[in-house]
Length: 313
Image (cartoon, rainbow, N blue to C red; front, side, top):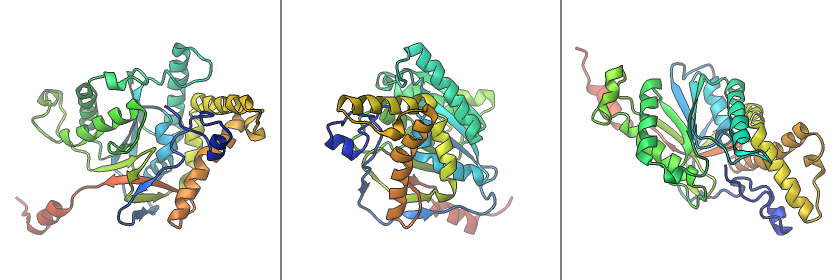
């Protein structure tokens, strides 16, 4: 995953490339006040399926980990679809070693989160803009139909100023696949193996830059789960910490919390770079911690008409 600057203070200190962490200054595009989604008692979503679809392992845990935990707690069955092979995200490992390390971390994330299964599409990291969008879309449509996906969590295909091609290419493929999976004339050969049309009804889109935020999820009850999800991405978080330390050292600076034991340094980094951000987001809406989304839900206009006028046959 391509990282941006670490803290604003590091930019002021001439460390704009310190850790290249994502989206520290996310901007909400003006619009109506967002809906606040809070935890529901019991498991009201039992029987529903979500897919977390991201180009890189750490995208979902960082931007939507609290929401993933919330949906799982409420009865969803979850799947993880990782589009790239994450070969560019490690500290001083070869490409092959990086692929293996992040593959092992992806398995750890699925286990820690309690997701049912992971699907790796294995495209080259930072190279999705050279891959046919149609190819990615067809693979996603197959999985949506196979898994009967009701809800997706992914990057916002309309997020502004996204610098990483993997992010916007994957996001556009997800958005197109969501509605095309419900069309009986799109890839009908898939029906020969028993699949049926199945459109995705709900989308939680996150972004690193400005986006239209119309839903905020209260992740106060699940923030500890989110921290564990991010920590499972060991190779990537270690890269962020060590890269930050290198940049600090080059400017004659040091952060004691990021030095010493690697596990403790990773925990400190997760708190400083991600959970403190979620705390600031939550504070804007009167919450302890929050995650912002461009949410697209099912249209209830036809559903209401059907409910009022349909007859049993």
